[in-house]
Image (cartoon, rainbow, N blue to C red; front, top):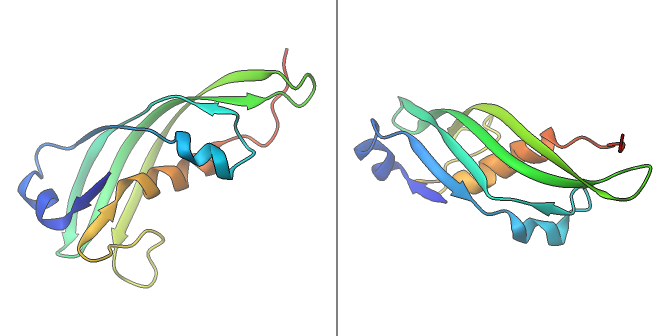
Length: 121
């Protein structure tokens, strides 16, 4: 989901409520074998005209291959993203052409939350 700065300014009180589909990312990663719909809810505020602070709750079910049995294991992820997006050089996620790519922001954080090894009990 890509948001323009104008859209975010005009809908500042509405918050963020999206369901993202990351299935296409399975082609480029070996970390997970499957992923369900990713629910993203939260808020944002403009710090400056070209700097937006997001606080987002992310919930998604992923399937990770067990290190000991090689069976897929359901692994529910629930985490909070607190991130400032701007067009400055020190921002990890940047505003590009007055747009913020929520998909890239959430995927970047999600990958960091995936455990490297999971064992089946």
